[in-house]
Length: 284
Image (tube, rainbow, N blue to C red; front, side, top):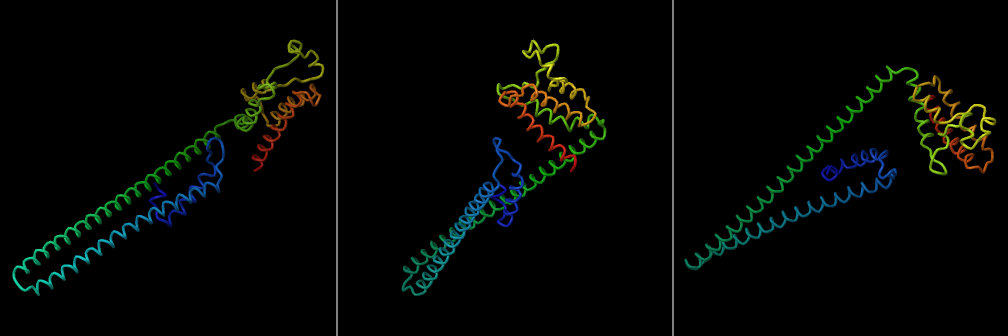
């Protein structure tokens, strides 16, 4: 509606604003191609401009036809007036007078019809203008409400952060890394790094020599307990536990073709990317 009703010079600004809004919009999980979106919006604008142009042309043609008809009726009336003056008898004059009245009646009817059409067009234009103004006010109100909500959210976040402890602030930083690693799935659709293997259960888990090879067992379940209890006092402590999970898996499953070795390398790659991203954010 907004694109249709706004003036042509306003449509460029609308298209630009629409494209800016669409930069971060997703449809079915895929980021919209900005160039394609721009072409679609511009094509829509051109199509609507063409519709408006045809409407204006039809209106202009209607006015022109009405004007021509009025001129023809006026010319016919003038011709009849002249014939009346030249009439030879009263009968012929009466006939011409009747014709004059009929032509006048046609002229008045055509004029009234044209006035009705113009009044209707004016009413439609005024209604569209009111609708456009209401839409503009609605969009402005929505934007103001969006800004108000955003400001309230930012204010709440600032107040929450002022009240949080150092452990809570640290927790907010490393929690996304932990969640991403915990949610990883590997060759069998599960995450083997959540499994707890220690000296009490290594034989039952089919790895009786595990604690002979691995001096300090570590897994994502141990890390989750520390994460949930806010036990990490530094980011480095969290990093060391994650890296211990990976190094233990690579050491015990030393064959590069072992599926657990491959899974550990996959998790290592993901962990390095996540860690680098957090460190860059902290430095920035």
